[in-house]
Image 1 (cartoon, rainbow, N blue to C red):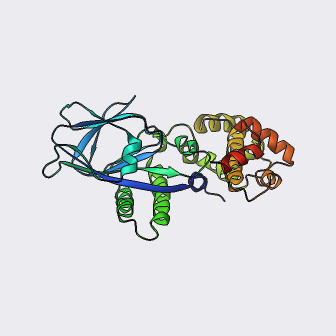
Image 2 (cartoon, helix red, strand yellow):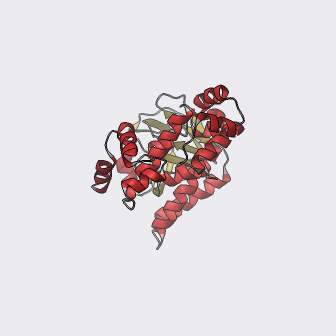
Image 3 (tube, rainbow, N blue to C red):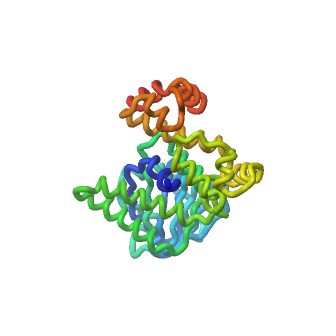
Length: 301
C-alpha cells in the first residue's frame, strides 16, 4: 500500500533547507514582506510575539516550532511596541548570517533558528493544500533537533551538506505535518487520512493510481454507502473522490514529465489512461498546456 503523506513529500522534492540564528534584545519589531515560500522558526531561548497578517498575534516561547506554508507578510516583535524595521525575506534568505534585532550589545533575551525550504518541484502548492496558514507546535523535541541539525549543516557547509540538507528538509516537513491535528488542518489529505474509513480509500487510490477506480469500489473500501462516502470524502478532503484522483494523477504526471525519462504514452499508462490522446486531453484541461509543451517549459527553467 502507498503512504500518501510520504508520496506528497516525495513529489515536493525538497532540495534544501537553511536556518539562521536570530536573536533580539530590548524593545524591537521587524516587519517582513510576503515571501510566498514555506518558512519555519524554532525558539531556542526566551519568547516574542508573532503577528501574521490576517491572524491574531501569538506568543512563541522556547521550544515552540512555527511553520508558515506560504509565509505571508508578518511582524515579529518584543512585547513592548517599537517602530518596526522593514526587511526583505529574499535578501535575508541569501545572506546566511546571524540576525540581531533591537539592542546589538550584550546577551540576547531571545534566540531562535529561522529558515526556509527550497523545492525542486512542479507543484509546491501540494504543501499548502495540507496545512493551515500558521502551524504552531509547542515543545517538540524532534522538530527542535531537526532544525538544530539544519542550522549546523547550513553553517558548516561540510562535504555532503547538500544531500544532508535535502534529507533533513524531508524529515522536517513530515514531522511538521504529523504534528498538525486533523481538526486544525484545512480540508485535504490530512483530514481524509484522519478518518479511518476514508483512509482506506485514500491509501487504495495512492497504491494503485493506474486503476480505473469507481465511486462504488472506493465506497466499498471505506465500508460506507456510495452517497455517504461521496459526501464525507468531499467534505473532509475538500473535493469529490474522482476530482482528488485526477489531481493526484496530474501531480504524478507533472513530476514524471519534468524528469523527461519516460515517453508521454508511458506516463499515460503509469497514471491510469488507456490512450495517449485521452491523457493529453485530461492533462491539457487540468494544467492548461499540453504534456509536450509542459516538458519543454520545465526543461528551460
